[in-house]
Length: 148
View: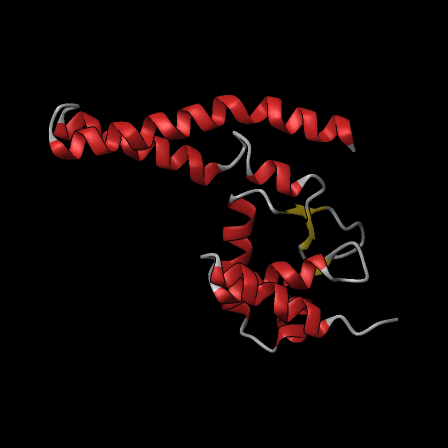
């Protein structure tokens, strides 16, 4: 069995360079590179030598964007997590709670500032961009899945 630690850490650094919080990226990579299907938060903390609180925050963030999920583990009293099947497509789909929250925040800002104010025009562009993206992505994701 190959030691994947270096590869996982390099990918985590790449993800962090792209804007993901470093510890969140490390937790994601721990799940992505795991030999087993699921890990507990305690196992992740032990592997990465980080605090349980850090793992908990990362798990919350990764679950919110659809990259990981909590799964049942019969006989275990601990919560188990896994890298979600189809996670990359989910990340770019309407299931992404972060994108939904951004659209909602833009709408709330527009309601306060008005569409024609300088701030309102920027917020309208933000809302319209994400609305367009979310409308177009399902067909793109379907084509990607069909090609697999």
